[in-house]
Each structure stands twice: as C-alpha cells, then as structure tokens.
Length: 119
Image 1 (cartoon, rainbow, N blue to C red):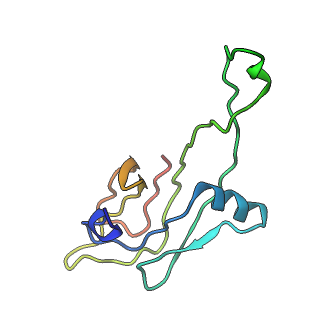
Image 2: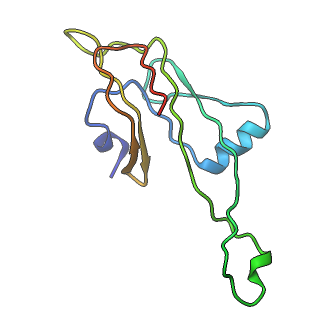
Image 3: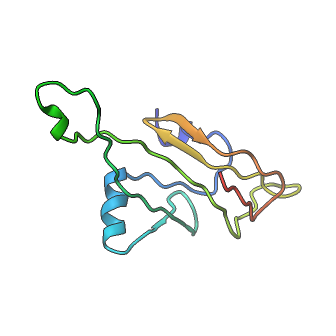
C-alpha cells in the first residue's frame, strides 16, 4: 500500500520516520520534524527507550534484556492547522500507521484548527 492510498481523507501533512531515528535525533537535541506532503509545518516528536525485562527466562537469559518494549503515544495539541474544508473548519485527528495499518488514532475534533487532544 502506498502513502497516497493510506491518506483517503484530506490531510495536512505526514511524517514517516523510524522510532530509532526519533530517539537518535532527540539525543542530539532535535525533536521537531518537518511534515511531508504539506506546504509547511512540523511536528514535535520525542521518544525514550525503556526496555522490558521478560520474567521467567530460561538458562540464565534473565540477565539479558532483549530489545522488547512498549510504544506509547501522547498527542497533546495542534496549533494553527490549515483549513482544508470548503464550508466550516477542518475536523482534525491524528493517526499512527505501522506498515500501512492504523494502530492508533485520536478522536475527531469537529470544526477546530487548534485541537487539544490530550490522549
């Protein structure tokens, strides 16, 4: 599935980035990433890796912490979004896709160019 087929709604932009790249950029003090498929705009992304120790490992493997973890997203707000509607204001929401499949989505904020997600 290509990026255009994923975005069936009008969209303001997107960021396609690997989690490892977010973590590396954050270590260098960068947490703003430009939107692609948009005239302008950027999104602030921060990530921290916290490995999970798996209990019950056999043969002494409990001392090894494999790269297993949990990804949690917190969407705070959007500010000054571009209106893409002909009548009224845009109805923004945020989606997270993993290999083209929606794995997280915020609620839709009707007629709001400055939505407070806090989810």
